[in-house]
Length: 219
Image (cartoon, rainbow, N blue to C red; front, side):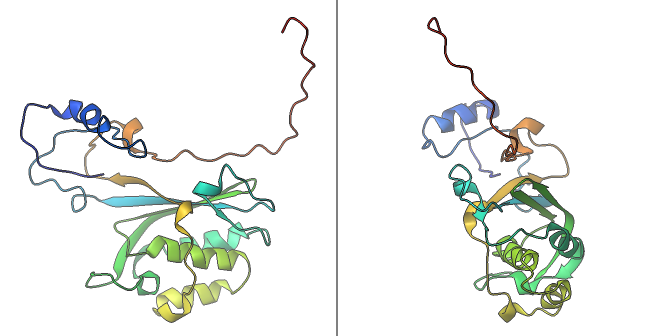
């Protein structure tokens, strides 16, 4: 979600076509609307929601590799991971999950919603907060996966972030599994289809592949 000031004859609903004709194919503008002058894409937001995808299969999946973190040594314990996430709900100081270089004056933020879903070998984590610290989601996911692999206890996980033990949070999840899913505002800005889920949810079929009949001569 971005905003900019513009003057000229192009109406708001024509900006996507105008911009997409000049942008590289890796960037697409889905929608545009006119907002009041005091509206700000960042400071007017009431929440941001991120999704992180972990592929927990034994063998690599080349189709999911650009969009997930492959953890294959053991099956993740999603129940322990979810318990850790739920314990973070509310307003807290999350300095343990803030990378160096941040310009924020404090590390307090409010985690509003969390979810964790396993569909076969795909584990999907979603975190919604009023705002996120620099590098926060990847640091949280690095700890969650370590917890899911039984490398430390749930009590150790909670002690680390409650006491701000940043030196103990050493592993950050890689970037390819992370997606900013949506940004919310007090009133709707775009139609739901243009902004609500900015990443498809990956589903893998576990059943045996279908049997195919031989092609007939006339096929």
